[in-house]
Length: 205
Image (cartoon, rainbow, N blue to C red; front, side, top):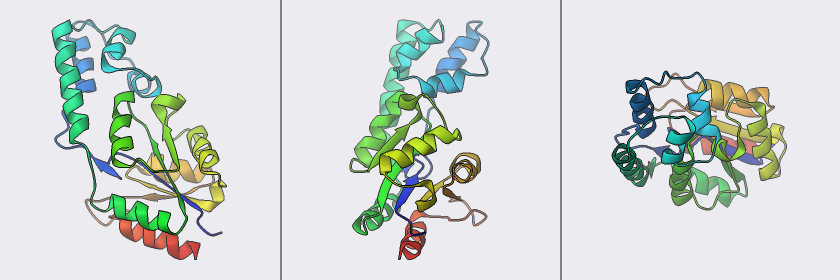
């Protein structure tokens, strides 16, 4: 079947975080230093509930001081402001859109990071954010939601990202053809996005 839509992962695929300082990890470390033991669902809580970092501290009952929270909010804002597209991201998206292939993004992320995606890629056809939908990759529901928003069937959709579990195998289980992007070497399906877009368009033709 021709490719009618493409879903991209966000961070590590379309976008790169410059010198990530991991403010949420720092927040959890503050909790641990104050006697709060990490919980298995901490990461999913942070990425499935729409809240600021300060709200997350309250939700997780992390006893961070106002000064610590102000510092982490500043670190977070600086990190988000420094996020930029990989050079091959915009050309790949644009080449697909020029040929009327619908394009979406599907990402597991904490709520504030949405801003970077919307700033760098403001004109996509669908945005599936775990923090808004309350569900994370590789749950099939997030892929089905993406296809519904794109207005296409899973079997007419390709997805690419830098996680085998979330961007190749997870989509495949939902009927989407998934591909693994590994920029560091050639063991993945692709090492960059422009050749992926070319392949999707060739299949579409």
